[in-house]
Length: 156
Image (tube, rainbow, N blue to C red; front, side):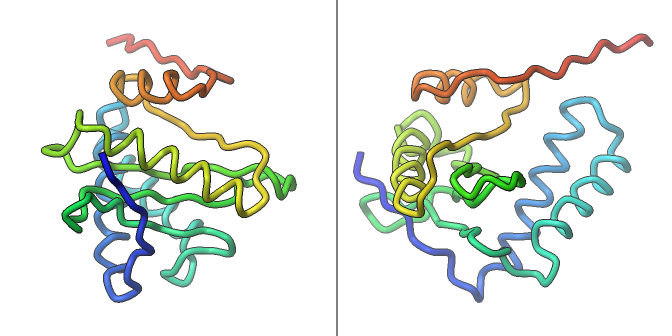
């Protein structure tokens, strides 16, 4: 499956930022946060990552593009929050729901790894919600290893 990464057009960045914020809030609700907390946390997270409404130093957002030139998702990649310049992070990757299961995510991840390596990265990390079993399986098949697990039990 031919896939390419294309830098997100700066004119489309505000819409992407809103989409990413909304998707993150939805995932936080699915992970157990109240809608109010989820939206507040998503807003705060995006404000930290994009204080001026644009990607921070070293961060880049790519459209994931299929062989017909259609955008099928996005990948946000950049340095992690440590002092290690060679430690990079997949901050977000989303393939449109109707395009999943066709290899786009796998290929985007491999291209993201190549991009990070070309920028001097020696590690690439990511977080994945526990309920996202499809993504977890993909990441494990690509050689990503679990480094921590956060657990929750509802006592209601």
